Length: 118
Image (cartoon, rainbow, N blue to C red; front, side, top):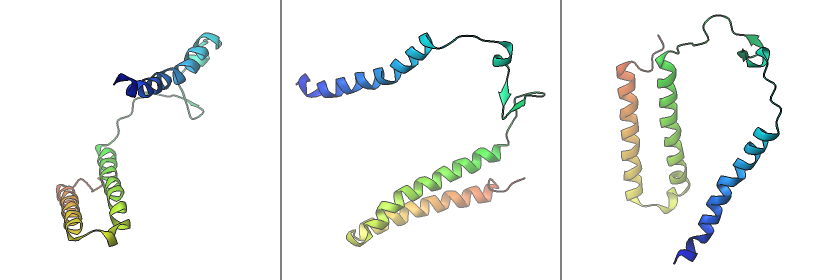
C-alpha cells in the first residue's frame, strides 16, 4: 500500500532539495565582504533621507481587497460562461445567486464609503 505513495515521497524530497542546493551553495561559495556602503539602506538609486517607515492610507488596502474579490469573481465566471450552452437552469440560478451576493458586497462597500478616496 505504501508503494503507491513512493512517487509522492520522491517528488516531495526533490521539491525540498531542488531549491535548497543552490541556496546552500551560494551561502558557502559566495564572497562575504560586507562594507558600510553595502550594508547601507538603498532604494531606487537614492539614499534614504528621514524616516524610512511610511504609513499607507487604509484605502490602498481596501481597494486591493475589492480588486482581489472581483478578480476572483471573474475567475469563477469565465468557465461558467464558456460552458453556458451545456449548463441547465440550475447553473444559471446558482450563478445569479453568486452575482447577487457579490453585488450586495459592492453595495455595502459603497454605502460605507469605502470606495471614496478622501
